[in-house]
Image (cartoon, rainbow, N blue to C red):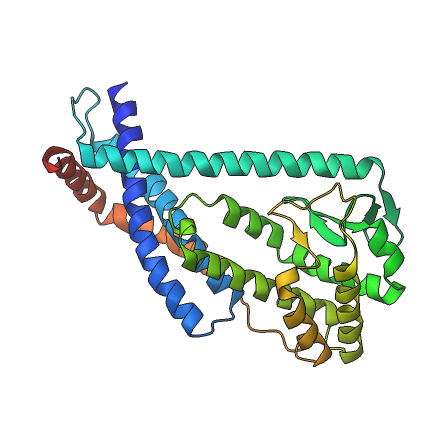
Length: 315
């Protein structure tokens, strides 16, 4: 029981410490990326999620295995004010993240169930026409569904509807709703800082431009059609809307990005997609490789000694 308690408390303390360090690093990297005009959506997303990913990886793959291996089960330890305070902060961050995840997932599920009750499948486009939705949206996280509001269906021409749906299909292929979910529920302190919100806004802008470019497919005329669809959806009234997209859903019309996207589409600038090679494959390889190196080099025992020293000497 003592081993379990020390694992939880020290795990939280290390989670908080790595989270704080990751927040400092991500802040510096984020400012450099914003100042440098970085348009690589995957890089922006990676910087934003760095503190949470580093904290989860360090505690689960490095600290806890080392603690369970080297810590004696019946060791009596007292935790000081510093470690206790960091653990409380970490616990608060994790609880907030869990609450957001459950609330967002449950709300999205309820909205999708309600929408499907009165939905009508649209022929040849793998989408549902629903009542109570303003515009077009990609709904859901793991198995997202394209929803088209009845007002948007009446306002858009066949070509405009096809372009709008193609835009949402591009979001689905890129798993952008899952990325939005991770951003919204990320367990970190970094999300409380203005630079994190700027990174999120920059990532959203690039994700929308990427989807626009995929929907246009290099056709200037199709770009004008997509711009027309954006303007028409933007003019739709929200009165009577009962389906309000969750933060994890992709909405076709984002008010703050409307002018920028329309200018790019009409000017033909959406044809050339900015480089956006995913970073997940090298990162997925680098993380377990780092853990294996740490264990093979017997650095885990050094981490255990550092932890013991912190418990002993910190107030």
